[in-house]
Image 1: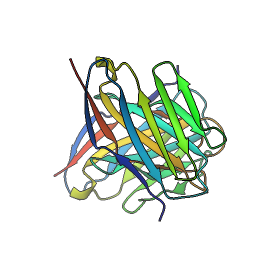
Image 2 (image 1 turned 90 degrees about the vertical axis):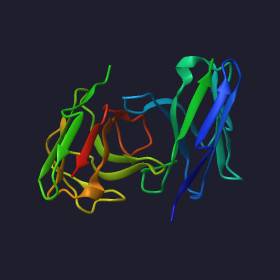
Image 3 (image 1 turned 30 degrees about the horizontal axis):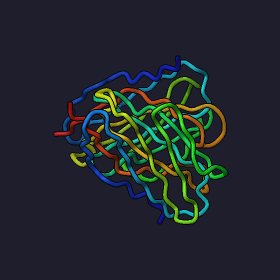
Image 4 (image 1 turned 45 degrees about the vertical axis):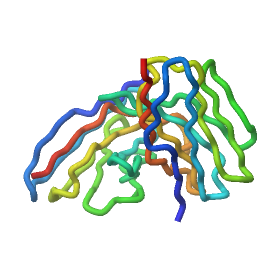
Length: 111
Length: 114
């Protein structure tokens, strides 16, 4: 069935360095790819999304890239800060307008 | 700001009890969702609703039911709680058709079934 694989499950980076989280999806009909950030004790919150008609999207320190041929997309965070510490989820849309979610990546920013 | 409020942050119930999880959103969103979040499994969709009194099964509906009597309120019901339903439950809402727009989540309800 449809699935989304997300790697790594835990990522620890030094403050100021960059972080990259990668996801692969199986449904070739997927055309919407959001990323959500979940801080401790809170619900997930959308931080950036991309649709299949573009290859890259940026919003300040955050960027997402999409390779439809290879069926993978990535989240890039530059100049990481302590407040970037959280769990990040990727997701991909399905043909029936739902989302399939990755398992999540715990990002730890070391001071 | 959109606000999705889940009435109970933490619940402890016994096996076989009936459990109600309530969710209210204040932005007149058409769509509401119940997800279950477990470590290493991401978010899994239990049920969703595109309109009042309308419900659709998600990926893991077994053991759950839902109710949407008013547009702003979506309830998740565990008819007879079991220990494998111990989890974090997240409610979400979104505007517009389909699940390809921004989801607004509540803070979650952590349920423990003993």
